[in-house]
Length: 105
Image (cartoon, rainbow, N blue to C red; front, top):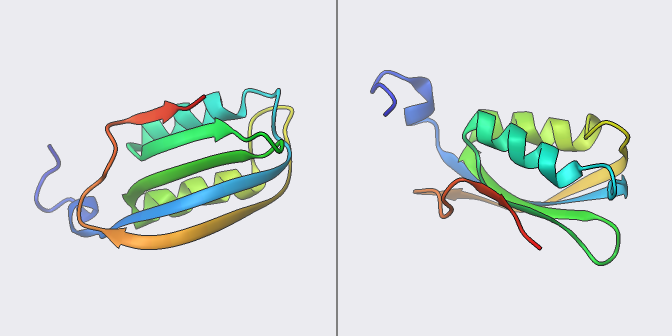
């Protein structure tokens, strides 16, 4: 439980969907997304798409979601080559709709 004076308690929760384009399959991209999101206490899901991209949804405090969005846009897993990342359906949520973070198949 976070302390009441913890700034993350006051920060609004953000939900956003993402799609990562480039050489992102076959390089353990979903595993890295899951591991980092779990460290940041961001919830949601990630999966490989049929078109060769990575799809996902993440929810958490704005600062942490922004940090993860930066990773998805410019860092990626070792061996990946990110062309670009699109973020859609940004919204403020009152509570997280997922338990933890999972890889979907």
